Amino acid sequence: MAAQDDVAETDAEGGTRERKAPAESELFRQSEIAADYIEGLLDVLDYDGDIDELVSGGRPMVEVVGGRLQSLVGQRGATLEALQELARLAVFRQTGSPSRLLLDVGGYRATRRKELAAVAKNAVEKVKEYGEPVRLEPMSAFERKCVHDVVNAMSGVESESEGVEPNRRIVVSPAD
Picture 1 (spheres, rainbow, N blue to C red):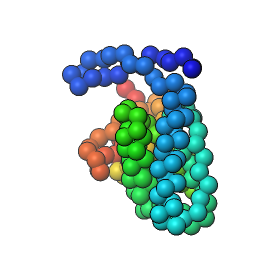
Picture 2: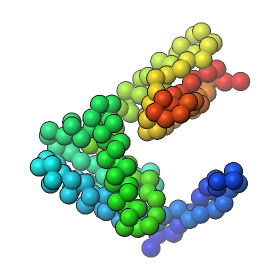
Picture 3: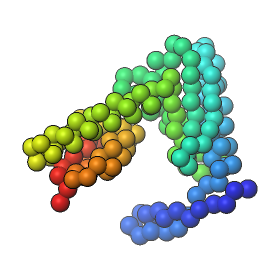
């Protein structure tokens, strides 16, 4: 079995505690459980799709590819987010541990990641040009992470999330 890394985690009181990161074999098991769940769902819906289970970036992932899958993504990925949560619950039910599973259908997340990189770069340009903060539209947690990653890689700007779900958004500002 692969060695596990220690990961710092914030507890409910704001302190930190150490926990073990799941081994790659456990992460792959989570992706298999989620893939079985999604496959059952596709069967019930009479949808065809190829399902790949993998581990990427220390996260279990399930990718579904095939035609006629747009309804599984939904408007701005809302259905995809709901399916991801259901798959995470299926993993939790079988393992007793929460999962950071990432579900992608029809390459939606990769495409959206590219779109969000353009949005982030545009916001950074405006902040640098005008010196004023730029508030972006509300986004899902996945979308916010994509934008934060792009902004954090650029100098002279910073980003933070504000608001509460489902209206949580990113504000890009000049760095102090």
